[in-house]
Picture 1 (cartoon, chains in turn purple, cyan):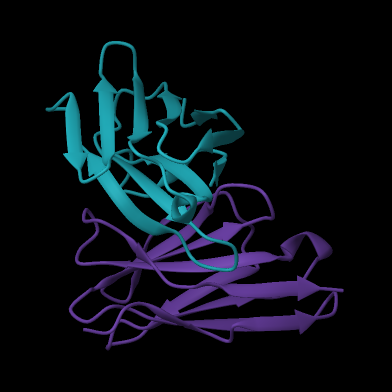
Picture 2: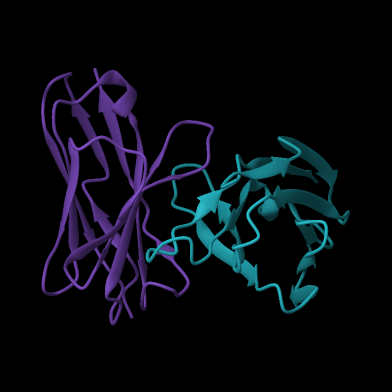
Length: 112
Length: 114
């Protein structure tokens, strides 16, 4: 059984650019949640996708958007990048909305 | 009301000792309390989790103690090993909305000295 995978591993962007991060959920899992983890802090919930629909959103601006595909993989898009967007972006998949969440290795985004 | 407060921020323990990390919450709607272990450059890994219908759960050297009336829960690592050196996060979740999102504590950096 393959775990949660994320790509790319690292990414460097400049302020104002746009970025797309990708996540493949664990086999059989229909729910993907995205979190932002700033250096030295706990992960913060961005949003969740359940069966291709957004199912809850944290306190993040609309320039953070997402998508879930029929195979339950997911994308996180961030427009108009700001310096404060520099963080580790984590994707977690779960069997269903209410089940345990298993995290991928994350994508380290640096905004210069 | 949605915060989870974690302490201590850092902890140094000798090999073979007991590591104890504490968390407190306010929202009584929380009904799922997991602990995650994170190594540098890696994603958090689910270690152990508890629901409020039990006061203690043990898996190997890891034990969660849960005090519903005090709204506190703690992680005990028995016989701590250098390989346990990592950052530990408590979290809480519940039916506040349909997402069952995880709300994390601020983390505890554990160092186990040989």
